[in-house]
Structure formats: C-alpha cells, structure tokens
Length: 369
Ligand code: FES
Ligand SMILES: [Fe+2]
Image 1 (tube, protein in one colour):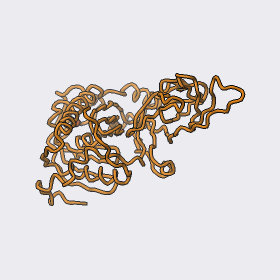
Image 2: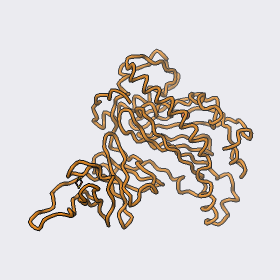
Image 3: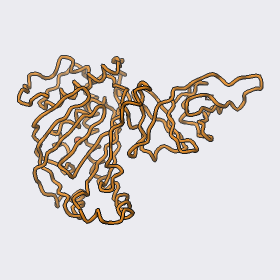
C-alpha cells in the first residue's frame, strides 16, 4: 500500500508512459463477451484481443465458442447457422461440433475421409447474466474465477446495462473509470459531486482508490428511485466512493445504495468493448423483503433498465473523450500529457504487470482508427 501523502506531481509521467497505449492484455482471465440472451441458435461473432470468436447455442442449450474461421476457405463461421449440435459454414456447408472437430461435409465422397481439421475451442461459462470466455491457457480456466456479480440475481437490486463500444485502447477506459475527477464531464448525469482522493492500494491484480464524495441520491423511500430520472429530487450528502480496477474489470460503490461494474473486453489496440452495469439497492425497504418472491421478481424485471437514459448518456460522453484521447495519441505519440490524479500511474502499473504476465508483446500500430 502506498500513501497518498508521498505523491508528487513531478513523478509523472513514468518513463514508459506512452507505451501503455500499445500494450496487450493478460488473456488468463475471464472476459464477458455477450449477454446470455444474445447467444442463441443464431451464431454471433465477437472479438477478444485480436481473436475472432464465434458463439452459438446447441439444441440442448449449451453455449460453445470456436475460433471464427472455417478451416476450408477461412471465411467467418459466424455467418453460418446451427444445425442440431453443430455449426454449419455458410459457404459449402461443412459442419463443426462444439469441440471444433469437423463432423460433416455434405458432398463427401464414399472414398473420402472427413478432413482432420481442428478449430480452437474456448472455455465458456454462463454466469450472472453474461457469457464469460477464457481466452488464455485452458488449464488456468479451472482455477481462475470470473468476476462475481451476485447483485445480478439478487431480488433487491435493480439493474441497468449500457454497452461501451469505444475506438480506443483499453487503458483509456480504465483511466477514465478510476479518475473520479472526470465527473466534471457529466454534470447532471453523475450520481456524485466533489470527490477527494483519500488513498490508493495496489497489488499484483488490482488497484483500489478510495475517494470521499457527495452523493446526490438517498434511496430510503420507494419513490426515491425517481431521483434517477428527476434531478430536482436529489439531495447532496457525504458518502465514500470506492473504485477498483480488478484486472481486467472495474467495480465501484457509492455508499451502500449504488454499485457500478464495468466488464472490459479489449478487442485490439484501438478498440474496446465493455458492459457498464449499474445496480441500485432496494435493501433499505424492509417491507419489500416480506412481499412474495414472485412479486419481487416481477418488480426487479419491471424496473430493469430504469437508469438507461442516464447510463447511456454517461457512456456517450465518456466514449467521445476516450476516442479523442486515442486519436490525439495516434496523431502525436510523443506529446506529453500532464496528470495530477495518482490513480492513473497506479492503473498503468497494473496494466504493465498484467500485460507482462500475459506475455503479449506490443504489436505495430495500425495507421489510423
Ligand atoms: S469455406 Fe466453410 S465450408 Fe467452405
Ligand atoms: Fe464517466
């Protein structure tokens, strides 16, 4: 743990500050690649750090993930369709099972054998509303757990999800999420004001930053939920604002009422997808707990997406800033930035440590976005 008191602005930027914008990722983690209801019998293509992957659900409902490349002519399998338990390529109809073996070729002659081609398959899990994929070493998938999101299934939390699709390196997103001073950008959208960084803790796989802030929301009456959409109802009061980079994802709490998570999926050096998930707690309403579970389930589902307008608004503002940062970096990688928030070098240290563990050497930058 390092004390905030030791901070000195002249320490930044660190000598290899710029290279962080080209660093790879540690693939030995679980990445959320889709919402559970996005994966159906219609295959979809996703990307995790330069790897094109196709997801599909077989007739028993099991989700499979294969490299998105037909070994016959290298076209995308995600343009095909699911037939029984197999994925059929759109071009000539070769079929592949969930383990990546070719199991059928429609025009195979009697004297021919099925091609001995093996596609890479990835471990996948359905957990807390998302399909999680492990792009690293298969053995590691058994010992490393996906980020826990218990609030997704708990009846006392209202959930909203916004999708971040950003043409920028993932380091810009993590720096944005860990730097609470950027609330200046959001004005009416933000849940808090006047953050002051109190302390930072760092380890090999996470950075925790502790801010004190003023919260706009007090969720103590059932109609308090309307504060999410009516700014005039909000009352400022002090609350701890904790933000954590739990590699490769991000978790934040504002007092006891709010939790926001960001499930980060870096796609390549200038593209990042992420799911921003907002949970509002209803734990303050003791009477709610006595209501029938079916009614509470109905209420939770009914209120899903209550904060959609706010969350999408925040995302839109952030994405614009991050894409401008990326473009400025591409235009002039040598230009120095100035930084006063000590969480930023902590975030960059974690990115470097984890990228080194993942043994992902920097690759050459594309000429433009
Ligand atoms: S390219 Fe896929 S079956 Fe021919
Ligand atoms: Fe933001």
